[in-house]
Image (cartoon, rainbow, N blue to C red; front, side):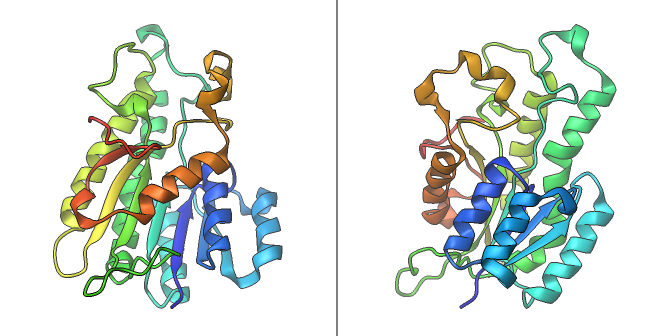
Length: 261
């Protein structure tokens, strides 16, 4: 049975590594990014895997882009999607989190929320029906006798999005947008959990990963706490592979521990 996965924000970092991992599992991957013509590493995967990877233009802040991508995926996936991973994220328009209220601006807040929180909700709006028709088969072990896997929607969150865990303050745009994303995940788990064909929806914290987003802050991170994209995605896939309907709407860290909202 062909499995279909969509990675939103796939041209670099964690999203790119998810594509590599899923392709190695023989999934058909729809990889979206803002500028496909500049996505050289995705093009390399296309040369290697051929028709198993489709590179689509999608700026998650533009609803029209999401609609167009959804039409393409529906026409080229038999209308079924087993896994959706929302990876695109931004720390702040400046590339660094705000350290105080002096640094806060309406424009930066709005832009960060559009990418980190609003975009994933709109992705669910246009791809939710396809996920309802999916079987959740993306290289997982076969479901137990008498049961079947559900499709999985993953929102890439962050530990700093936890309100309970926040002891340092700062990073207004990023913290607030990720907290909003976690609320969206909970909402989606309720709506997409209705009916016969349910979709499991979770927020995941990937750890501190060696990517462009976190690079300005690597100096203060212990070496054993700065993860490669390969290690982070391996950990996250273990969580995704073992999800069941009882865990929908939850928020997990890379090590499988449930995070407080």
